Length: 170
Ligand SMILES: [Zn+2]
Image 1 (cartoon, rainbow, N blue to C red):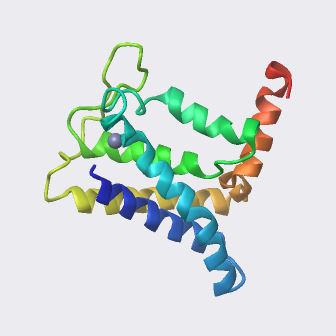
Image 2 (cartoon, rainbow, N blue to C red):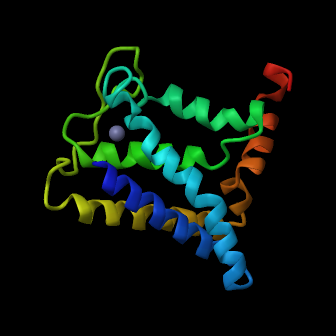
Image 3 (tube, rainbow, N blue to C red):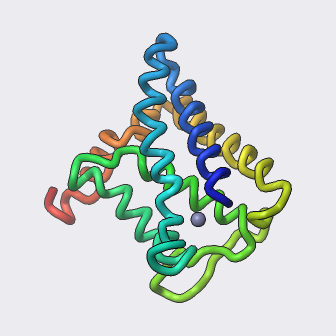
């Protein structure tokens, strides 16, 4: 997808998450949105830095970058929520271009989902909205299951500490 679609997706996803977290009033909803939206938008734009640095759809479009961004808060205590933007960028790119991504780069191989549209398709905006809707269904299910704390990075850090702590000694 192009940058406009990535930003629209990230903003709508942030609005949806803010609402689905059921804040007690509009002010709290706005605070949650202002907390979540900037890092999600930055994360949604981050992978396409490889249009300038590296090889496009390879250097910053792989699972190692996603893992690094997910683990970053564990070590440095910031960049919370950025992983949501990176993950949704990958999802949109898999459905929004016909070239696929080097998901395991620098290992060889280009991976794609056999459905979707090309980036310049008239349907790209519609696909972006549909992907956002499906993502918000997942967020709804997470909230309905009482696991909404895992959407927030501090709890994600707790999760990774429990998972990796014995291995990496944190
Ligand atoms: Zn991309």
